[in-house]
Length: 506
Image (cartoon, rainbow, N blue to C red; front, side):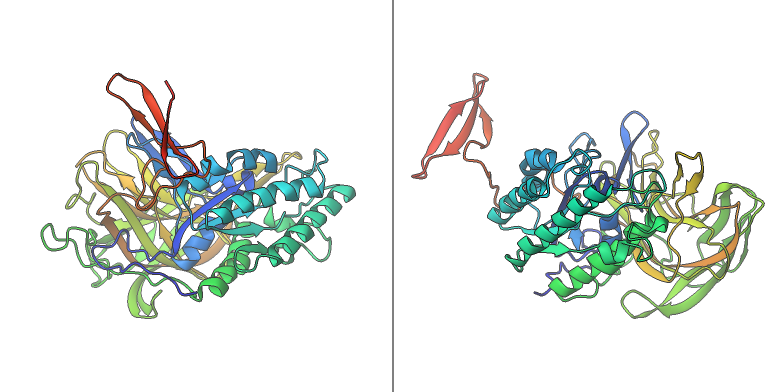
């Protein structure tokens, strides 16, 4: 199967080639990947969490799937594509599968086998039956159904499965693997146990979870990089989606071009400010914006980019000396306070940057998270952020566990969710490093070819109320509802001979 791409260039919607639309459903292990927070009275702030393994898969491949939070006309978030809800069982998911997943018409549905079914004592057969029912619905709609195995646990916080429960977990996975083998190319079973289990204990690796159940950034990165990316490459025959490089914005000639000044990082006349030393390209600035101890050495280097072409990168060697506090921020940004050219009220915008993280070069990894942020300067101060910063968790022994960005060499693309301009005041573009100033260590991040573009037709991620192709109702009793002149509402359905049937609703 070959990747179906959408041509990039200055007029592309955010510059992504897409294979199709993906939908996900599960419990909190899936739902942790979405973040939406109220900002002010009329705007919303969105987060692409680094605890979401599907977010990692997208970033490591350059967003092959349409998969983001949806918005209705009032900017209310609709978490449709990521239909993960904490605490749910397979029966809960089956009950809402058509509404929360199929109504968004995904090409591929990702399902994580449910962990909450096991402690109440449900049998493997009952769990598998619910999963197969969801798969049947997906297959009937022409969708691919991908099952991620039911994950193990560890007992650092008292959440490990008992021995009988672990047998049920293994039985569920074995039965789902056997089921997927009967439907090759339609249902896939991705076994995550070899990645997640510590051979020494037979349990979830303690470094992959903060509470024994929910995965931390290292855990979801392991699944994404070793399981999900491998699956994508084997099915679609592509290592990753090329990045597009839109031309510079011009109000007449290139209205959907890159609105940032000097995104190719030429020159050496940038501004060095608090906590930063070294050299920056023209029209760029770097500074410590929060905290008092972390530092960075900036330089401009030429290296191979995502597309294997030589480009300039801003290299930032971030250091913490152990005398600061957690959550200190180093950032690079355009020298101009805001981007105003091309900002149009109620139009949609997206920001993107390639990053290459080197392994920690000395001491302890000080990077909690690299963050790309697009912020609206209107009064409600909405913003879109990718990734969300690491968090801290206090376990039952009152120990504070910090989520740190995975170490090692990592290349990825950060992209924000689409954000609507709430005014014409302007947008700000920030490339952050959220750091732990209480440790001592140095790690380098290289930032390459950033872009800020307007989406020509709004977000690609449509709500169920909209469609760009055929609109299909899966139940014979469902159909569009129309209001007549006297205010009555009628539902339209079709009988077995293809004739329209009208039923009064109100």
